[in-house]
Length: 419
Image (cartoon, rainbow, N blue to C red; front, side):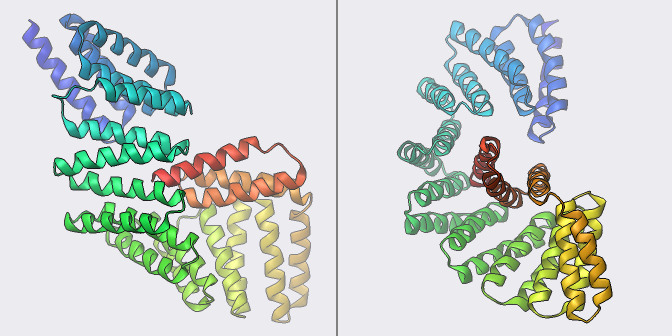
């Protein structure tokens, strides 16, 4: 009888774990719930605790904080009673993940440290490396650079000792961030170059693109625009090769921004058109890219082309009810019409702009916040962060409470750094 139950339990657990690995957390939870019922019938506490931990993992991934925390705590109590130190460590790591979701970083660090402390010496070392990496990322979020660097170095040493080159490369990226945030720019570059060499060696282009992308950000923030452009161009090629159209579009858009700063407007137009071509879904992002393309065409004095691009942007902004952006675009359309001598139509556009731009600041703040939230939901974190910064400036000008916006900026910054 027990053999049949164990066999069925294994089948359900394997299905749940397969869905967990694919990021299909609702389906994973369903199978783990079914297997948990069988685990209860087996009267084997270690099996029940193991099942409960995975069920709680699927729940925290869905934001079911209360249920996940309850499950991890129960699993921890069982493992403590059994003196199952590996299970204790995993349950503590689960409670750390709950604290992270709740933005309780000190509590998360404490749980990770306890998980590392009780981790058995006979258990897989690479799992210990992952726990150290998680601890380092928590310390990075609270800007405790010394502890973050120490955790990452220990994790990297384990990866190196056990020949896990991918993990070693990823930890070099995390160390690069810690070093860069301490203004140790050259040391950060060295870590990133090592990461790039590692990913080339193991032919892991997905990880390689992350390393190059981080190098591009550093070059951009340090004002090394030519190097930033070269790095982003490599990133773009890799995204195109793997048909990751959305990421390719964002990369091309960013290259256009860099080229504009370098005053290479013709090439900037080329990359912006490429950004639209590879990801032309009709959403707010497309409207913003058309608006930007029009602005570049104005700088190149191609007013008819600029007007055509602004018109496309206006249609999208009108569709989504973005009055602020629509008003701005009508003003730009009016300028283009004036430049080509069509004063009558220019006046019509001016009138439409004035109608849209009533209560300018209030509408602008609402618009920018909605755009920020839209891009965050689309996981376009760089664009979202830009609009949150604009929202913050307007809110400060108006004397409005800015705590929520500041928290959003911190949240997006953490996401970008973690990526």
